[in-house]
Picture 1 (cartoon, rainbow, N blue to C red):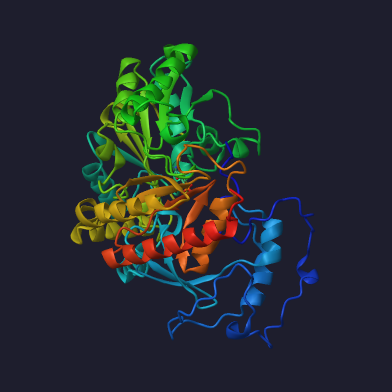
Picture 2: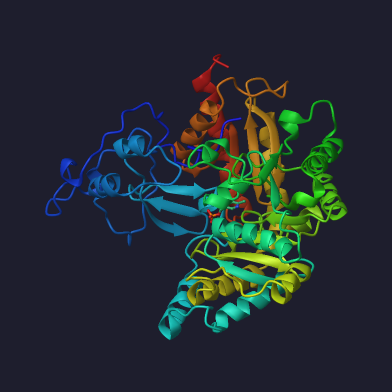
Length: 515
Ligand SMILES: Cc1ncc(COP(=O)(O)O)c(C=O)c1O
């Protein structure tokens, strides 16, 4: 299966890496002088930029786009991008956001059906979060949680997370991102077993095509082959099993029966490695980056049963799913299982400021506290007070405005209903949706569960069509992914569906009989 690399751009950096990388210095790039900037309104659009009529708000500054693009090309390496191709095309520069919409420097208004990168749960432009940050910065911009110290918002957030997360996940360690949080987890679970006299119990099992971040441990726990190839990963004692993806792998089994079979691969792997060697299992409740694989409801309870049977710690990576994405606060509640450890990031601040967190249950915490000795782990910004103050305000808004509840009982079911209507389209082979996250699987023949022979081409085309229609979707392979801000209204869901159908029609017309 195609790795997730190269799937995170905006349709601007998709050209293959066969283009010769040219090392350019700043001097070699033609940069318009600041004295004679190219007015944004007169800058020619690149072919992939949508030609929309929406106007930018009057207050939006006019940027010298070409100049900024040249500086970007000269100095900025973008994550998950073919940077040589991107440098030639020019980056899209975003300037403004309001609710579910963002504007780019060309003045295009785009419905962001991907909430940035699965994270802007409360939508763009909430001044309260800026005010919370400003208040905290003015009062105490920084203090750490080393040296037997901490700050008030960090304590309050720890208590709030203990209250919100299910079961006895009562203890938190703060990081700055999902990747860092997963790095923390890898060290903690190994330490947890080592201090109890089981240093050999250090294997963590993840899933092929899983995504747990881009640091050395995060990328190792994840199962993206393309990522493993860069930097000699995975690190030792990390193993992977096949993910649950009924569309590709279910054969003649009904989804629920398949869910059990897919989960039992974990048991087979534990027995193959030896239960005394397996420290933990990690999984995204819904596998996001690879294409929103939503497992059958039977999958996670069976995973939990197996973990309990062999005393393997169960880690739910809720970086995407946490804070309401499924219509429940956490996907563990949606699927009905209880993790021992949970990874949090993204929706914890709705992406307004970086923050990651690890939740531990009472058992793990007790061992770490009573037997673990001094914790030889931490980040300068663990529990940064500005980030934790913003997170508290974000959670207050989610609660006070009943955003998660509305998503569960109203807008989530409405999105599901409307996405399922797209199931009648000739290109759509499967509709997957849970709460406010979903996917359309584009296929060459909807009577069969079969992929396009060249995976990713049609998905990329459809994504670019959507962008041309003022809609931000993400494509992984040929899965069109949806993860809008949770505050999206029914009328905006109608707009999302109308633009998606138009994009599907245009894609179908463009590929014609070449299917
Ligand atoms: C499930 C999951 N875990 C971890 C991460 C990594 O988070 P970050 O990019 O904040 O490091 C991501 C990012 O998309 C993710 O989807």
